[in-house]
Every structure is written in structure tokens, then in C-alpha cells.
Image (cartoon, rainbow, N blue to C red; front, side, top):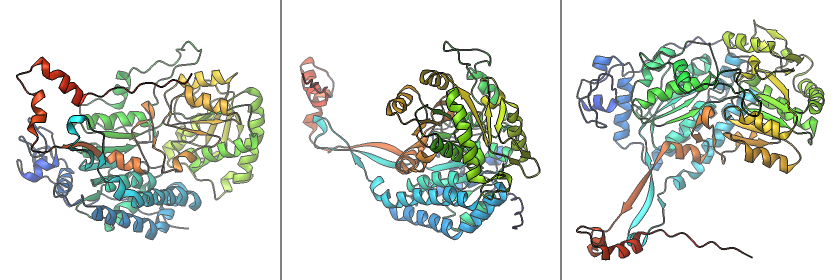
Length: 567
């Protein structure tokens, strides 16, 4: 049995204070507390950490100086850093498996699949295609620019902040990092302090593989993360989890808290119903509220963000399906990492008749996967922390336990559980569960299921099981979500060719594969005109004359193509 690693201490940043007021490094840091008018990098008087005392301003300044030097621009540099990241995954494979086992009891099979294999897939896809992705993308031109060059240049954002979560602490930190490196940015990474053994592993070993002038790992708790967010970054990528009450919300020092922001967002009161008869619910108070905090901090500097959040993911099971296959695929998606997955199916909608069949098949699938006593199974992980355990355990009081329900606080074990007789206003339906509990709610028709889904916030994923393509297409066309998967769960996010991300309360922006590169690369419009041929420009110059307008229109107009109708 491995001994738990000690909790990580504060990482020695090496750049604890910002440069003196007015210095190039101080301006580059972008610390704006107490600043007067700022006109961008190095413009305007900036009062930096010599006054505001931000402990991370010097680090951000150092990385920004490296970015401004152009060091990260060449293809060769980016490829070398990505190759080094691959060596980290290869050489630290066993350390990663051990750390995730210590933090959450993750089976090595699950940890290898999610934390290493899927990362390597994204990494290899990027290495295979980066030279192509970096090329200028030439675009159509109008008549007046036919002799010129018009293209989209994939530019760098600059200094990027990536904040990772605890549930997949390697994958959800490194996959965004792959895109940020590929796009030529400098990066500050903040792994989750909740998965403390992985945090320590990343903080102590990853910097040995990457260029320390351009990439840094920061270990930080709630208050330190708040201070980190006070700095001006050029892009922020945040992945959140619905871990309510595990720790206090960050103090924004006078700015709105997540709760206040939720009120401003117009949360609807529980107990009100829409015209379909389904209860309207407020936005979940887990990762979306944390997303608002990050977005509020980013708004101070007009910093663009990607927010990977999550709400309750519905799973509709029609009467026309193979029940045994459905049960195995739903049970795998729900109880994998036991339920602590942002794209896990969060509840099932089906008819009363299907519920009875599904309960039998789910019981068989759980026994097949984890044996008669899942607590003894080496393939079933544990809840990440005591407070999260208590939160999930309390949700067992909703409805009636049909399968499972056993708990052990000492080992943070909650059995794979299925709930029935669940009501819309039960606690288990008020928030993303993030645990091994699967509520089943009955509906009378496909239309009722769609209305139920649409009465709630748009989820990160919607799942439908049916052998009828018409049913699948109807759910796809009449609902909205970040992703969609028919006749399986979770597997859509394993494809690097598909974008992964949310919509509305479940997130903003997307990544994976070339979508990660696009997220961290600014599409810079470029038109390179010749210095001569001035006669071509005369029609647009004053003094204006009506006789020039037809020529100007002819050389710049975009006409609509004629519609072709076959009779």
C-alpha cells in the first residue's frame, strides 16, 4: 500500500514581486489595482505589486516578457514543448496512476484511459497536424482586391491562465495546455488543490519538462486563486466542478459574490411551473457560480474566457431499445469515476413500463461490473472528499432507493445507486449530482421528455437510447446542449475530431483536437495590398461623386447567388 504523499506547500515562484512602477516588466505584468488609464501593454501609468502586493504579478510579468520576445512563435519551439509534454506522460505514467489512486481510489484502468490515453490522443493529433493548423488561411476576395493577398493569420493571445479541476486532474489541465502551447502562448497552470497528490506531482515534476521562461505551475487555494485572477491575462480557461460547500467561495474583495451574481442573473424560484407543467429551476449553484466568479475577474481586463462547467445531463430511454445494452452503457457512464464526471448521465427519463425493465437490467449490469458487493470491487473508485461525500449522501433521501444506497463515511464509499419515485422538486433534481446516484423519472411520451429537458438549463450533454432513428433525430433537433450522443454515454468526448464544450449554464467555448488550437489562437484578419495601382482606389476618395458609386459597387459588392429550384 502506498503511503499518501504530503500535501503540497506553497510553490516557490521565484518572482514574488513585480518590478518598480513604470518599468517595462511592471507594465507587462498587467496588474491594474490602483492603476490609472491604461492603453495596453506598456502604455499609461501602472501601479503594480509594489503597491498592490500581488504575489503573482512578477511571475505574469516574466512570462509576458518571454511572450513579447517571440520565443514561442516558431513551429519548432512549439513542437519541442509538446514532445516534452509527451515525455512527461510517458515517464510519469506510474506516478500519475499512483497519485489518482491516493486522491480518489481510481482504478488504474480508468486513470490510464482518461488521464493518459485521452491526453496522448489529443497530443498526437496536435503533433500530426500543427504545421497545417498554423498556416495562413486564404479567403475569398472582391474585385478591387483581386491583386492583393487576404488571409487569416493564426496569432498568439499571449499569457494564458488554465485552471484545472479535481475530477480528472491531469486530463482537464493538460488537454487545454496542449492547445495553448500549440497556439504559441505562455501559460500559467493552476491544478486543483482538492486532488492534492496530483497537484503535488504536477507542481514538482511538470516544470522539469517545459521551458520555465514560458510555462509555470502555481499551487493555490481559494484566496490565492482570487489574487491570481487579479492579474491581467490574455486568455483564461477554466474548468469547474459542482463541488458545493467543500470550501468557501473566493472573496472578490468588494466585487459581487457568486450568490449575488446568481440573483442578478434572474434565477427562477423553485415551485413555479411553465406552460408544459414542468417545474422551472434556478441555475445550479456549483460550477456555473464559479464560472461567474472567473468571468467577473476576467471582465475587469476584458479578457476572453472559456468556461467548461456543467449542469444536469438528461438521458432519455425510449420503449424501442435493447434494454440490456442500455443498462450496461448507462451504468458505465453513470458509475465511472463514481459519477464524478461532468458529462455523466445525471438522470433517466423513460416510461413506467421501461422503468421496470430497466431496473432489472441495471441491477444485473452493476453486479456484472462490480460484483455482488461493489465496496469490495477494485474497479469502483471513491468520493473525492468528506464534504462532497456528505453532500452526495444527503441526496439519497430523495425518492426511493431501488438499487444500492449503502454508504461508508470512513472510506467515502457510496454504492452505485438507482432512485425511483423521484419528484421534480426533490433535492437530487436541484443540482448536478456528481456522485454514483442515478434518479429515474417517468414520462408519458417523447414529447413530455423533450418538454422536461427544455424546461431546464441547457446541459453539457444529452443522451438518447432508441432503435428508432426518428426518435433520435427528434431529440437532437428539438433540444439544445453542448454535446449529444445516441445509444451510448460519454464516448462522444473521446473523439478529438469533435468539439467539447457547453452552452449557456453548462459552459462557454469548446476545445479538443484542432478546436483547442482554435480556442487559444486569435484569428487575425490580414489584407496585404500593393503600394501602387492608386487609380483603383480613386472611386472611394472624396470629393464624392454619384457617378463613381456604380463602379465602387461593382468592385466591392457581394451578390446573392440565384436559387435553383428543380420542378
